Image (tube, rainbow, N blue to C red; front, side):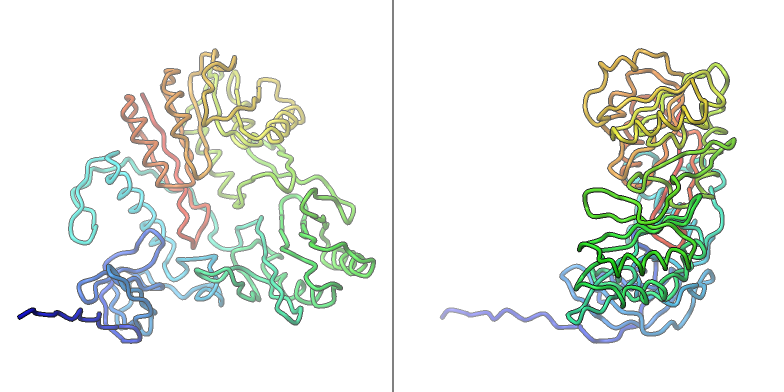
Length: 451
């Protein structure tokens, strides 16, 4: 007689509450504990905490929970400094004190370096790192943790009635949170949202605005992404807004950015009173004070001399190149974007720096035959985008440069690139966190390699 077996359905845990001990933070700053012999991820929790959570997602290998109550709070827990923290996706770690945030980020770098065999290390028990060789950590590069961001994009969304929501994306969503204030933005842009809501409510058209970019360097600037042709009435409203808030306004129609009001050139000052001019679409560091500290640390760690010839890869507008040029014989900066190369050259000329040369090159392709590679470089600085610099490093190691300073905005690609450098005879002499984005999961790092 044949036996027939019924598949037993999975027991649904959705909606159930559970008490969980949080053991660690994942790479996104989310607390991780154990429930029903699986990992459970609970936003807003910290290691060592005992919490009550409601199960809101069930997968074959993990659960996701929503925090209901904290039974035992962590020592480093703090009250979030923003009323929108639990809904806005801009910040991840406001509930963790500054020292705890830096400790979390340093541990993530250590874990990634061990996993990529940059340093020796074994992992046991729920990916907790054990028996790890020490990295030569130096004092982190920090500054104020609130009111630090001087460049940001504020989202605008319209409902079916044409009413606008002004703010930032919700956590894990494309929908916006209606923001009242943002204590991460520099003053007075931290409290500009009410004024933006007022003017948007009076504009003509169904969906006239896509987003609003704010820049606060030498002059307060708004860049309006205009989706429809601006009416005379709307132009009058924006001109009055600019006068009331003492700011300049530019319009972005998707093809070009043109001034609506009288506009000064955008710029910021850096080491030794160097003035760097930029266009709205150019990349700049959003935390000006930390950028100043970062550039000063780079010059210190490279221990530059008047005899040095420096290669600066992914040089952008000359953020590192120009300050370095004040202290060395020559700097060669290389960047992939033509417009930024031209702007870097203009910045060098405006600052009367004649020992800088800038070139355009795709650093992720073969650049060994470019004439500038024939220089005898003594030191190199690389500051790549999140994708890292693996292809560039494969060629860079052939130049035989003994000192290399790597400024990273992505720890995963930093770990991969570091393994490659170490395989070619480099060692890590110094490493430091750069607290460019306080209260977020984003990790920036500076590493000095010596061959």
